[in-house]
Image (cartoon, rainbow, N blue to C red):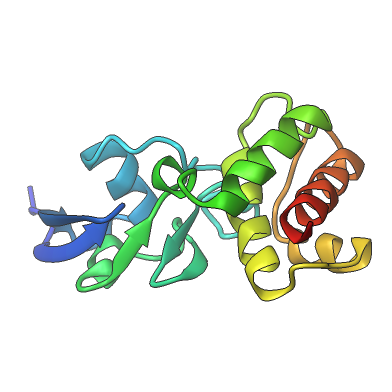
Amino acid sequence: MKREPMADIACQVNGMPVESRVPVRRSLVDWLRHDLGLTGSHVGCEQGVCGACHVVVDGRVVRGCLMLAVQADGQSIETIEKADQSRAVRALQQAFYERAALQCGYCTPGMILQAAELLAANPKPTRAEIREALSGNYCRCTGYHAIVDAVETAAERLSA
């Protein structure tokens, strides 16, 4: 039986230095979930379509299922577990709760990370801009109207 090639990586995960030996074909989201126990980002489609696997790498939201863990070497990674320390993420979480923008919660971490990135770039987005920014995230429970309402509510509060 042939062994899978391994590689050593060193990066920052949620502000902490991490060194790890990983299979070269392991996705970033699988490494975060299975090796580090950070289960906030989810594995959905494994094809980069649904957005459930979103994490922040060097300040940009990326699809963790399409990035390999070895590509994170030298990078700074932030997951939803750490992101809640941000004012924008806390406002989004509260607005998602108040506006009933979540049900099962599977898509919520990816939606929130993507929405926080939008609000950092555009503090007062229109509903159309919110929809466009979230267009790569699938929700099968709530429908998107409540999610757009929640992002709009958080934007209003953060701008006040």
